[in-house]
Image 1 (cartoon, one colour):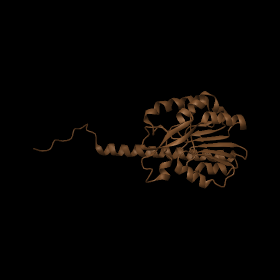
Image 2 (cartoon, helix red, strand yellow):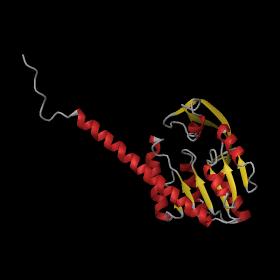
Image 3 (cartoon, rainbow, N blue to C red):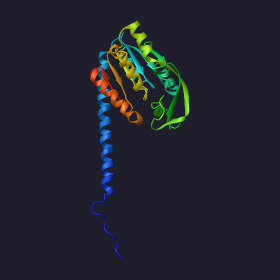
Image 4 (cartoon, rainbow, N blue to C red):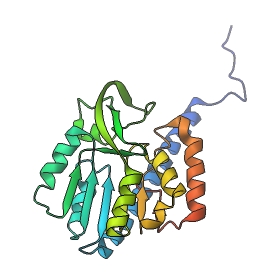
Length: 235
């Protein structure tokens, strides 16, 4: 008996494979475009900063952005909770008198929390340290080897800083999911108006269960603030 011919409407696996590859290429292209826009946006900010301006780097990691901010002469306040990254950050900016470093995480409440690292952290600490997070359930995150870190109430910190020094010129926030609650509260209490420019990387892809919350945040931010004031497409 001869083999039965494939059904006319049966999906071709080759087509499915090509569609998957095309989708991956499109995502990569979009990410590259976002990255290029973010770099251009930062270049514009750096050109406008002057000595005496106060800038904050939340999630400074090993200092790629903090070093460039420091070079403008602005007063830089940098937060980084991961011990590995903080060590590299401290070495890199040791000679910068205009930089203050805090080995702390930022959130809506002060205390101590578990910092969870990437599952491949031991094999690649430099690459893995950028993924360290206070939020459980993140993609590619190991919760078994979490470490305790100090956390500050950033809303209170920022409010006190503004009272003392005036509006913050620039705030960068890349804190692996903790930005969701923090940006909500900063908006609710009106603190975003005390920051001339804020950029934040949001982490919808990392935290699947929070995607609807991120959509709501984006809608709120886009209704109240211009993208030149609060930009959530940092990468």
